[in-house]
Length: 73
Image (tube, rainbow, N blue to C red):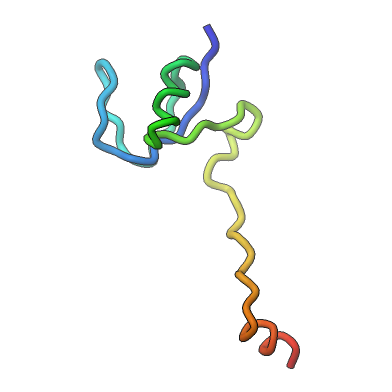
């Protein structure tokens, strides 16, 4: 059986014998993980990046006309 590492986005849900809290990282069978991800309850993680969870860089700022003027000076 394939397993997938997921991060819980929406707490308060239950799986058999387990309460899901926002921010939890757990390993689920692929079918359960995909079903929860379709409902927006969890985010799937690729196996090679699961150990780096939470180390994402902040997104680049949105370029607006005002920001372009400030950086040009």
